[in-house]
Amino acid sequence: MVQPKEEHVHSVFENIYQNYDKMNSVISFQQHKKWRRETMKKMNVQPGQACLDLCCGTGDWTIALGKATGTEGKVFGLDFSHNMLQVAQEKIKAEQLANIELIQGNAMELPFEDNQFDYVTIGFGLRNVPDYVQVLKEMERVLKPGGMAVCLETSQPNLPVYRQAYYFYFRFLMPLMGKFLAKSFKEYSWLQESARDFPGMNQLAQLFWRVGFVDVIYKSFTGGVAAAHIGIKKK
Image (cartoon, rainbow, N blue to C red; front, side):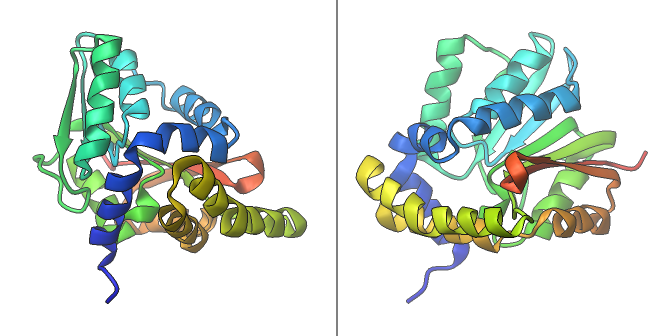
């Protein structure tokens, strides 16, 4: 019997949490850190602002937002994996950041009132939800008018040879790396499927427009293997 996507994703991340950070660095050749830094520069988060990081996982982007908003700001990190949040909490404690609060919850149904945040981010999590549009709608709902939604996610390279090499790597090599480095062949096999099936850059931008965001832009990274999408909530 096939599990519903939500239950299956929860099971995957509850199982791989211990090796998640290490595997992220191995799989992306450390590039995911560079992609996030460049995205943060584009966002230009200011001290005192309010941010929400969805599917926050082990908290790297949450922590970056916490540092950017400073002691006067407030950052929430939300994830449905208890084990991932435990890792995030340990990192936050080590960084001595008092302006971050972690919540176990569902990105499809956010536990926040409308118009609360200056920024809502989701990093490498949108591809794992059952309904991309529903999550984007929730991001738009909780943003303040003029607030910014930001999605950093794997994407689909366009160059023919590079595209084939990328798919070969994701389909065959990444699960093997998961097997030997994290003892998680099944979980990393599923993660490559979710990345392969995720919309390309143009298609995702169209979903942003469809939800109601304006001034939608995106930036490709490393030949299109990842992309940052940004949309603004109408004032």
